[in-house]
Image 1: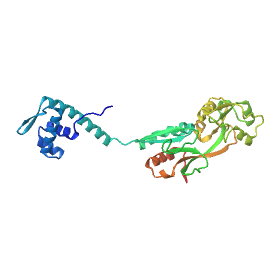
Image 2: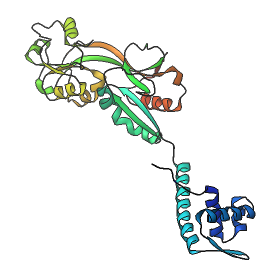
Image 3: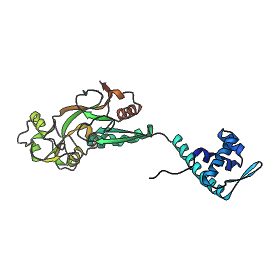
Image 4: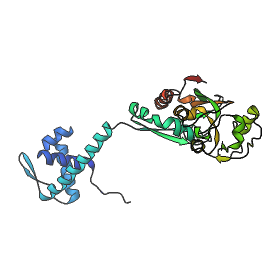
Length: 301
């Protein structure tokens, strides 16, 4: 795009003010310059355009037809600029922050409580990055994350949210009560894409339970926890699931835990960089996450 060929902004401002007041003196007062400077700008503008913009009277400046045409365009343009500046001054500055977590934590725990954040911090745009893989908290990919582990991540502050236990769960309509009957039902497996196994799976549970005739390699396999939970609710089999993520289903009876044992998993933590511990946006998200029902508040690091 070629550059615009326009007269100087100072000359245009001087002309617009003089045309509005019909006076070089009043225009000078408005712009905090001398009347001589206003007259100089106007004459320079007339010379560059090759037209007379004013009919000069002893104490009044009257617009020529050409001057009126230019004045109307400038008046609209300056009004538009003034409106835009006013909006920028009064509009709250928005800040985006990205929180990374697993799809199940995002859907089943956080999303129902986003309204809490909007009420307190309407100027923050929350972006949720859902992934089973840990991502860099570099302010580009993500700013904070909810991770499960031992709470020890170099360079990161880790604040414990909740403990994590896994238990067999299924629909009440399977009428399952005895572990000996478990081999009669399909097992539902959660296995993130690319993983051959997970730290807590049916094989690990079988080592504790020692149920005769149970084939822990058979059954339905899902790469997303929410799909595995939905299959269990639908009576498609028995799933080994994180109890904190199915708390609502257990409370409402859509899922039941027919028997044990329960396996202790690694807790969930909110983590963020140590060098951003005083960042107001980070602290706003931190406070919101800690207020979501089910969270604890224990800092590590």
